[in-house]
Length: 402
Image 1 (cartoon, rainbow, N blue to C red):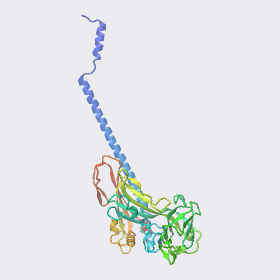
Image 2 (cartoon, one colour; image 1 turned 180 degrees about the vertical axis):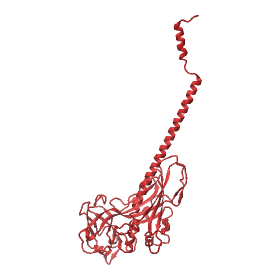
Image 3 (cartoon, rainbow, N blue to C red; image 1 turned 180 degrees about the horizontal axis):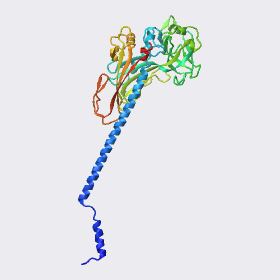
Image 4 (cartoon, helix red, strand yellow; image 1 turned 90 degrees about the vertical axis):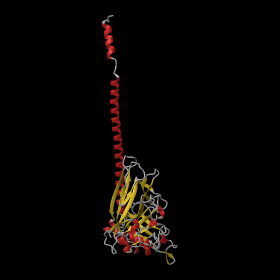
């Protein structure tokens, strides 16, 4: 049987469209699988790199911010205008009006401004009353600062009666106190002396006044049941530290050369947030109030904080650091609050170590970290990036302005 030309052409077309063989299909699948596996590996490596980069970036950002904040606050320790707290105390030209004559502070540790810096180790040292309810991580250090704010305003004149003090001030500005008619703590200072007291600012314009009334709490010596001079509360003339302010009202900043600052309390410590992540918390006075606000999470992922203090141990201070000590070593042997005040005034610098972790897993291996002289090993295998940041801050007001 013979085939015509059309039949031969159709057979040829069918043979050309027969497809691929099984071997060719397997080879194609193998190549596709290899390519897919490579893409998966590239994607996985890219994802891991992205997580590592993001985690490291967060750690570095938090570490820099925490270090800069601590440096700035520590440099204000002892600041009292053109003299330091150590010099003021030695010369008896500093009065904390929140303290009784015997040195006790009825309002609690937060008002002890004769001690501008102190610390303790959670779970080892005794926590002050204002921090007793905080679930601070054991073995981490708690740093407490009582400082005058950087912002200030000039004092134009002073008016006094038996138990009242009124300061006429210049332009306070929004940074000084954005909420007028609120009772807060103030620091009044010039080159002769300094005073800490509670008072009310009337406004934020030139000519506003800062007024201490006879019932202004927590100025304890204005309460006749606490501190008295004879039958009446001790007047400002008796307790004010600056002799120039005891004279008749002086008008003009050239006469007083005085400024007034906010008096601030800062407590920094480590505890877990709602998600179980250790963070650096900050407790301070409420804005426009003399009571402490609830502790707020300040920087997430700060897992540990250790502080060591450079101490001048010489019997006669030469403003030179002899050794670094823990908080417990600074106050070792001090038997009362006044003696503890004296020990903390020997501190001339602070060395802070922080362990910062990334928010999530980043493929980092577990290991032991050294924070200053303390070894710390994370308890959980979370793969987070961790870095140690250390900074040493000279308390410049004690070193260079005493």
